[in-house]
Figure (tube, rainbow, N blue to C red):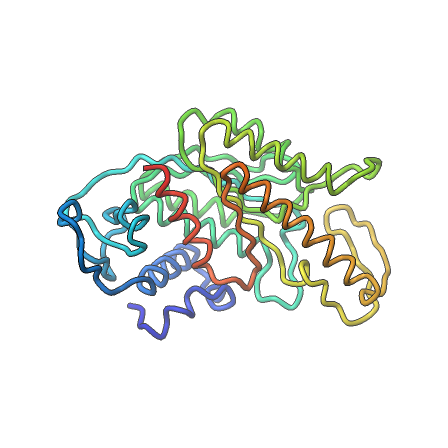
Length: 313
């Protein structure tokens, strides 16, 4: 059982990473998150909410009422059991670039796997159907959505088998899989979105960005709510290197020697421009965009999921 003082710790990626068992990691994140939010009862419910009570530790997640949460921003349990029928597809980037960390406790891929596990744990316990696809420059694996507890263990086993390889080609891998989505639901993409672009192209940043957005719009066009989690190591955003360095592209092997101090400002401006444009375009199409560093507590990601899910019911 978690104590109040433990709640923050079990949302901290550096601490949760010390737990070897992936299922336990997922459960600790979810329980810590639930306990930490809105514990006090809401006074003043109208008659339509008379069959609810505040969430308490140990309650089954399947009885949480997400509509009430959307209105009140508090977790309440239905006094009666009601099944849901959300269908969710999780697409997880397993390219070489995700296997990066610099002075951090976890790689981007380790963070992404833990996040995918926590989201799957929530949805399966809510009796929702969850599917999982891992990809880089090809689709590594694809598990269609199912909604039973036995399948949750299958999802965890698949996440534990993820081995980073290849380059990031989001559109090439996800577009064919999107055509298999035949029902309205939720699509979650977890990636650094450092998509590989051929060097002969004139505007690498624009080409990469347009390719990603085309895929996201394709998913949204099929009446799916979309959540994007862009996972970055802190140094990828701030370029905070303090000495001359040799940089190696872990997807292509290309090397470059530079003095980071002289290019830091230009790098930061370029990165921020990409992030801002990505976020703006997502918002324009009703896509939930989240920038998560590998030091970001997991509650930010879970809140985004709850918010988007409430729009489906």
